[in-house]
Amino acid sequence: MSRTLVLVRHGQSDWNLKNLFTGWRDPDLTDKGVEEAGAAGERLKAAGLHFDIAFTSNLSRAQRTLQLLLETQGQSGLETIRNEALNERDYGELSGLNKDDAREKWGEDQVHIWRRSYDVPPPGGESLKDTGARVWPYYIHTIQPKVLAGGTVIVAAHGNSLRALVMALEGLSPEEIVAAEIATGVPIVYRLNADSTVASKDVLEA
Ligand SMILES: O=C(O)[C@H](O)COP(=O)(O)O
Image (cartoon, rainbow, N blue to C red; front, top):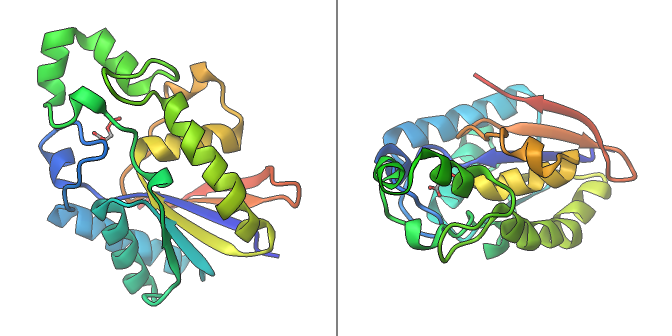
């Protein structure tokens, strides 16, 4: 029984490089992002992981990361399910704005609250709680059954959709999730117990 769940955030995107709030906007990967995706594939291969199914969002940066990673890891034809439930948090009116400009306009503290708090949404956008309200049911009903059936499953998604998932998987509090960051292109490997709790966690860093 593998019961393995791998989470990976997309590689660096063009808007990550430009320091812009991205959310549901759809920039492509940078050259560095392409390299990060390949490196993630190498590490998954070295760890001996062979996937049964993949899940990703409706956004190109996550889909392309998954595709590049699977090519490197030797599973380019893997069955892949895309769903907008796994999309990045909707950054609302902040989408497309420079993060430093936003700090100048609204102040460091306010921007940090919008970016990292659990339940304060950015103007017109989603809080992490709102994001979790679509990510978690999708995980429970569609992804988790594949893992608990003994599968090895990969999810390629986004900084905040994955923070929402990690929060629920690890039982983190709203205070604890503030400090949680998900690095681009670094796979997180969870092994689950039969009762769906986390048995172990390994972060495959370079
Ligand atoms: O949508 C974005 O801008 C990024 O993918 C995540 O941004 P954050 O680290 O500011 O939440």
